[in-house]
Image (cartoon, rainbow, N blue to C red; front, side):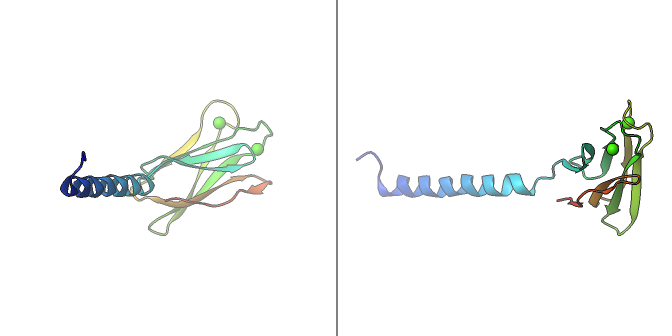
Length: 115
Ligand SMILES: [Ca+2]
Ligand SMILES: [Ca+2]
């Protein structure tokens, strides 16, 4: 008989504490999230205060993202140089609530709800 009743109880309590910490730790943590329209994409950084948009298709359609902020404002960011080189970006003092990627004349992708 290696374990008495008291040490069994301590093991059970510390085991459930570790489980609770694991359950609380990961899903609540802010993380990067991506949205797409075809291969064109936009992503919000883990801070949820900064985004970039990138044209990944060389089809001549300008790519932009419509960005809705937590204070109710809407704005957009544009990848001005198309599929070459740079991305378009934005940074705000309030968190991004949702966004979606659009292409001129091609419509928009699914709305990403940032959490
Ligand atoms: Ca495109
Ligand atoms: Ca570009």
